[in-house]
Image 1: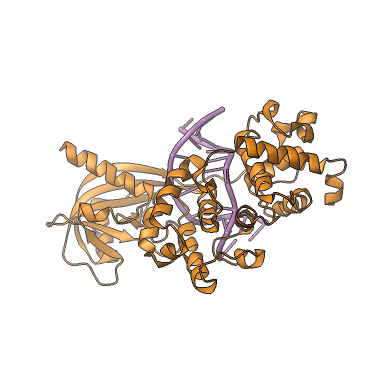
Image 2: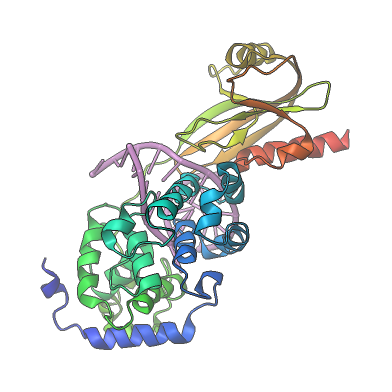
Length: 366
DNA sequence: TAATCGTGGCA
DNA sequence: TTGCCAAGATT
């Protein structure tokens, strides 16, 4: 279907006006809305990917305090950046952001570029973030299509394509190129997203409070809760693990750095292994795995707890043991021994933070 | 294209 | 308890 047909008898200028004036009036006071610094807009947009506003706020504030501008983030150690991202999830966002910021620092003299081609070439900056930075920081009328925008516009224009399919995003981009306010593309894009977050919500939209309800075809037909059309994703896979909290006679704990690619890349964790079979892994087998994988002599003393952690696409079930280790750490083992104090400098995924919490609470009790 | 990549909140 | 959801990008 042509955009021309989708927008037949649609009051474009009226819609723009109602949306933008509503956003001027009702927008939330958020820390990344205090100015239009392209760097801060950029950081906020990366953090907000698949992440709720309430979760992002404290991370954004502390991140900007630690890395207030392009130069400070470009010159920071990656470990510090990951630590600042700890608990926020999707950690490749942090590494891609710093990588891209370093490119801006060097290739663009520290100035975030303002063309779609240049911005979208930066690591971690896809179609949505490109449009968000261009419209919010530079006032360029580019579409910024996220989940909110697809939900809101699917209702307003009765678009019934499956928004879970990648190619569907282009339909919305094409429509927005016709719809977007040339005078205020920033507030137009943000208004669509804010409307999706506050009014045009997934399950029970507040249509009676909606500033653009007279423009909404789904509302007029009473089908707003039937849109958007979104296919279901597959269920999660189960992964059984065994892990060990190991301390030596000097009181140092053994922690391992994960590989630089894949799940939780470059984060730190307690030594752990995929369970050998459904019968489980004995203490002796765990000691043997630690020896063969790390060349570390360990003695497993007792069972600590069972930690269950749910990711978006898999579930970890971790049997945690406590023991001792002896000897020296091999050179290239991605292992370090740390005191309790030193451990605070390392970024751990939430699952292993929970292992540590369990260890501490049980250790204190005995 | 479909799968991968985190986490916390909520119906 | 389970599934779904949130300002997506990468491979």
